[in-house]
Amino acid sequence: MNSFTTIAPPDAAALAITVDIASLFSIVSKVATLLIISYEREKIGETYLDLRTASEEIMRSVFHHAIVTDLQNKRQGTASTLTCGEVRGGRIKPRGRYMKITTEFNPLMEEI
Image (cartoon, rainbow, N blue to C red):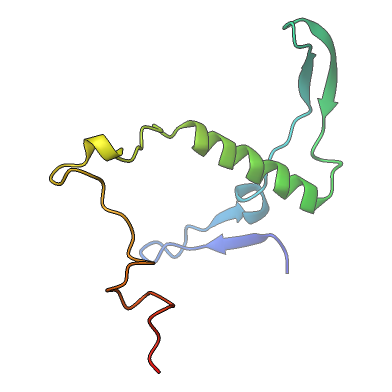
């Protein structure tokens, strides 16, 4: 199967458009220069990252890690839970029912 296909519009049968499918879905990879920085924020050196020579599995994992990191950095990150003093209503924050005598979750109160 070749990577070229011909798409003909239904209203103009004489007009044919040739599209290279491989160029539509290819990933362009350039050699990236990465700086090596010390803990004192000084440039120690630099290294190069070339994904064209890497295997497909490594390339996918590098891109996946970059996308996940970018999405995590876009989060607002303001989620919080209420403390015992912030709960509205009763005096104390309600607790779970695991070891209370009157609950069906108590392992000590099994039917005989």
